[in-house]
Length: 512
Image 1 (cartoon, rainbow, N blue to C red):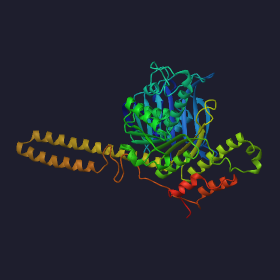
Image 2: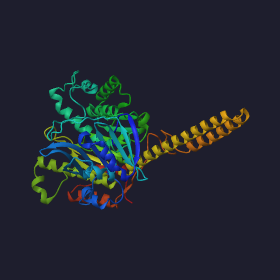
Image 3: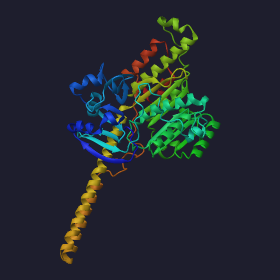
Image 4: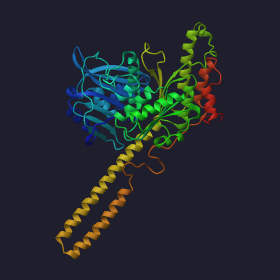
């Protein structure tokens, strides 16, 4: 669910007919800072909304809104995400602007950030929009269309982990030679921020970073989670180099990052029971940044074994297919080492995306950072939508259970108060009898409340860290998803891959 880290001020339940009045009360032309809506609600959209949120049979997966200034004045810029592509369009900035009004009605969850407050919403199973108002966490900046880039980690403010890692000095100035790294860290955090919106704020998180290296990005991740109010978090970095791991653990100790740890080992032999606390449970997010060649595949196999809901992978050094590629129509490209290498990279990453899709993930390949900073700029972003829906549903159930329990406790307290008032008006003997009766009634109220999952508890059979039961999809060679993967590689003359062999070894890919 979108983040909203300020203290809660109010909560309300609105019917669809009340949304227009709610938006009008926000005075968006004067106060809107930013808005993000995620996941269209299941089922058919209203006919008048189809043209806005469906394009070439793809449903909009995300909608971002912000005010900008153009020649005609202040406008609302909408960014629509359809699969791997984004589209931008401007609208008048009014409460009934189609992306704002229809987005609030049609998307499952989101947050509207204003100067006055943050309004986090999600739709319940009863077709009510639950809106939680929190203290504002963002301020409206310059509305110039070509404004200076605003980073999640700001310059001019010393950030302890960046100082420790030599990116900033103690006054918050980024060293000139480290500015590219600073930009890369911020771009990475944008993807992390996007992924975290898919988890309820209260869910405990376990994240594993394979091939963490000197761990600029791992430290950035932990800092970001802490700054955004995630208190039940475990992050584990894995690397082969003992000296690098020792350095990272010492740095984490100096920074007092108690739930960030680094381990020595290779990806294929890593087991989640090697961790502590939250790390004893299935990882919610697998990160693999610049893991060379088949190391990326090893990370994907682990993610598939665990059924991790989110995967962020930036592959590099894709050599496995280099000598195998054959395609008569592409001979002019495959003749030269440089162009063959680029083609091998594209084929390798496209095949990985096909395999993830075969296992039920929705997959996007997006630019990680601009080409002038590094050529390794493709990020494979994969979401296990069914797992994420279950996590959200269980969180909603727990919240509703908590609300019912609180209501029952309030009812019990009112009954006890009424019985005490009655006791004062009657004789001591009668009052005593009434108090005993009220006590029994109160006990019955407590038992009734206890039948609902109390705050912080999860349904029977589930770990509070794990969130949902582990799901492992078994893929068979006859399945259409796998056939699409194999047909694609056969076209390029690529034989049995490391990814296939590893999936077979761990029992996730079977002949029948």
